[in-house]
Image (tube, rainbow, N blue to C red; front, side, top):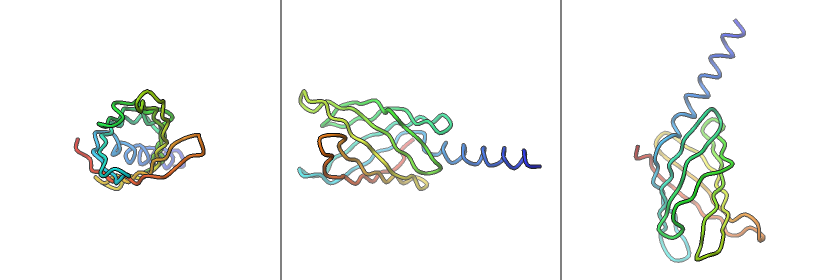
Length: 121
């Protein structure tokens, strides 16, 4: 009986994590107006991978990605006019809604940016 409960719990976690997989479009208010970013998430157990793209920073690969229930975290490295920029993201998925906070890694951190988005695929 105990094994059955453990297996059921594992499947429940995997089912929640599977809702994160897919394409999401998000926006945030920045110092120069509204920014838009597309996230393509792939989930394997509690590991999050994929890529993200924006007009300002181009395409970046998602690294160090983790999923814990409906919580997710990951890092990207982007190129900002020839300067490498590392950003960390943390947030939560609730149904088809995505809420993320991003901030610069290193160099004393920086201002947090709040992203909100919707699942498109």
